Structures are given as structure tokens and as C-alpha cells.
Amino acid sequence: MKRLLPLLPLALLGTSPLAAIADPVWIWTKKNPENNEQADFRTSFVAPADAKTATLKFTCDNGAKAFLNGKPAGENPDWQQPTSVDIKKLLVAGKNEKIGRA
Image (tube, rainbow, N blue to C red; front, top):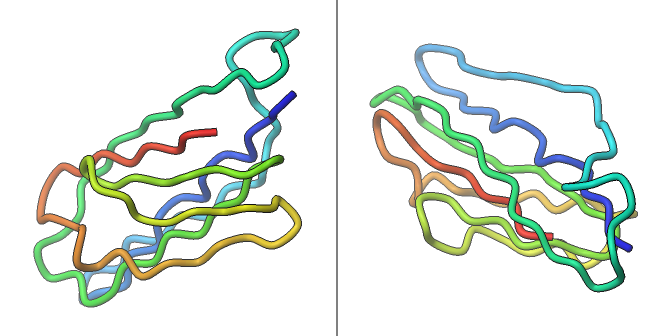
């Protein structure tokens, strides 16, 4: 059974600060998931055009893959060690879509 520790919000550091920190919460698609069940967790956000850096930090019980705007952004093989990836090259000014696949 997988349980996703949600993708920690993007921390975009630029001339206009846009940073969010959330307390981790165990989530899944239903109360009693089946073994080897997969799920996608999506969210969108607006990024400023002048963002200088963009980092995605995430983790997931039993591993996960992250995507930004439909492109692979990173992989986390083990929940005990969060993954941190530079996603500036995948970021677009305006609306972005982030997906965590667990």
C-alpha cells in the first residue's frame, strides 16, 4: 500500500518572493487502497516571470515521480530521503501544473 506524502509546495525564489511551506499529511485516493495501486496528485500554481530559481522537494512512501508541465522533473525512490530537484528549466511564467505519481 502506498501513501503519498504530498509534494511539498514549490519554493520559487526571485525578485517577488513566492514560497509556501506546508505540514506533511498522509493522503491517498481512498480509505483502503489496494496493493500496487497508483495515483496521480495534481496541482497548479502561477509562477512569476522573473523567478530566478525553482526547487521542488518531495517524498513518498514506496517512491514517486514528479512532473512539471508534462515533463519528468524528478524521482524519489524512498520516503526516508526527500528528493530536491532544480526545476527552473521546466518552469513557465504564468500557470504551471505539478503532478506527483505514486
